Amino acid sequence: MREYEVCGFRVMEYDELDSTNSEAARLPQEELRDKTVILTYRQSAGRGQVGNRWESEPGRNLSLTAVLRPEGLPAAEQFAVSMAVALATRDFVARHVEGCSVKWPNDIYVGDRKISGILIEHTILGARVGMSLCGIGVNVNQRRFLSDAPNPVSLWQLTGRELPLGEALEQLLGCLADRYRAVGDYASLESDFLRFLYRREGVHRWESDGGERFEASICGVDEFGRLVLLDAEGRRRVCGFKEVRYL
Image (cartoon, rainbow, N blue to C red; front, side, top):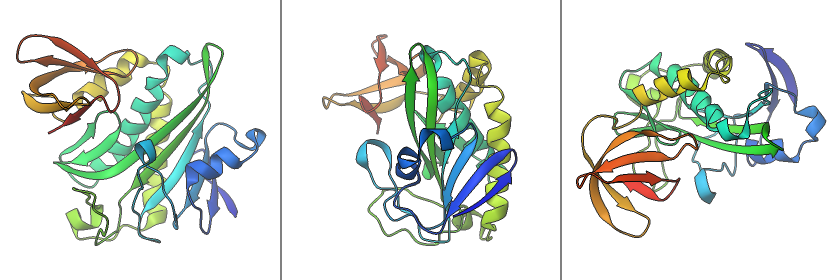
């Protein structure tokens, strides 16, 4: 393991890990101070949302977990961490390509293709957020995707240019440092989150977890991070993660 600092983050770089989030969870709590990053360029079992795998060719992409300890952040505002991390990752991608958005709750899309996945696991202490493990995977230089994921894309595929991973890491952590400073300003983060939300405009087709298909527009996101939709019948629908999917 090598240790160094980038943009105010303490980076712990490993030759290979099964999962950066899993490694962060295994480390002693006292080692995980605020703005610690667990990084590897070879991740054998990257974790996505609800048990999904995250495909990442060794030596081609960014795979990391940022440990954040937002001082005094109320547990009721824990979605502020998700918004800050998603917006920071989108900011990084937007340095290189246009058409970047945040697909609720926190995937990063370019057009209709997924370039980054984020997995956030919170520890709540009483009424406050104690610690957030923010797993971030960004497709940087991967040229081919072999899994059955429907729509992955990388910066290399979009630009035709290799981006050195050290440079990519510095840019991403710089963006994260900027957004993390605003984690206590929920309204400001929410405003940008809604501005960059995927399919924010127009009426789109959706499917509920019960199989119902309907058309609705996005009204916003509530204080718990749930997606708020307005369907074609004028009904307001509040949807938690995995309770609705885009069609």
